[in-house]
Image (cartoon, rainbow, N blue to C red):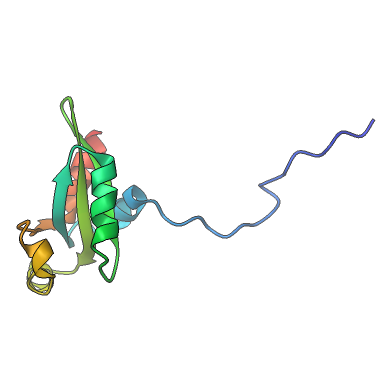
Amino acid sequence: SASPAAPRAADTPAAAPPQSDRAWLLAQDPRRYTIQLASTPDEAKAKEFISKHTLRGRTVAVETNRGARTWYVVLHNSYATQAEALRAIEGLPAALRRNDPFARRVETVQAILAEG
């Protein structure tokens, strides 16, 4: 008796899924900088923040675990130098600059992700 064939995902090439926020961050050169726009213990608030503030480039929310606390940090883009990241902060809308965004070395966030 013929049974329906199970889908054979390995045989059918599919478009690559979009890179997850975490994978994107881990793929960055650790010597680069990113801008931390916000942090919150609430994942929904982090995602809401990103959709409220549409920025050119990549804005991600990554889960970080420090001890028993889970936080979501909202990071924007990847910059070659700290000076480049600082210039980008100056160009952010006032609503975002009010949160005191800061340039952060990618390596520091990657280290926190590695702990989790």
